[in-house]
Image (tube, rainbow, N blue to C red; front, side, top):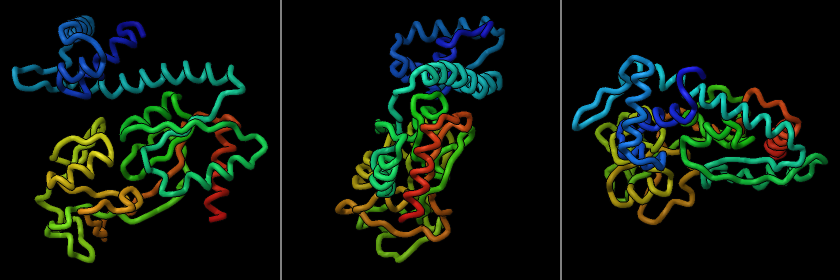
Length: 281
């Protein structure tokens, strides 16, 4: 990388994701003045402004948006190359499975049992992460296999197998206007406050940022917002909350995903075990 080092790309992406120098500095564990200086140095080297700064906001320029898109791919590629080299030289390493807490739709025990019966099985390390991290961990090699939810997670660059499909429900306080309904449609949710998921750009949420389902349920209980999730993520339903089916929301699919370039036998063996456990269910 002739003009930018990986550390500089990490600094830029931190600010680009947060659009706030203070939060980015905390996330990157660097002093804010040093981060600001590093960004100015990058802009000077590239000869283009990457951010529009004001006393109240930080925005990406067109050049900044281009660097955010391609820079993330470049950073992931470097990390994946390092991880691939390590994996290739380690024939005894554990298999690492990443998922969100409670994000297995009750299938994980059966999958692990099926895998343990295989002659080539290895120890499986379970990693828990937030909404955005799981995909990145699969792309850069920190995890070998992941349980992801479609349409919430981005499967670009990942191979995958669907393990389970289920309806989506809206979670509301028991006193909410929708709590007594047998079902609702997405149009019925207009005007309601929905969450913004930390680290996940886009989306329709306008409410406070949440990092996981536990935080979301606390915020719903407090009356700050409502949420739409796969039913299995909120069962058993906490006291004081109600789940109502959303009839026109696309079904949620739990998928087993892995890096599309990863053709190691241990990954293929785990995938086969997961498919076998699904067929035996």
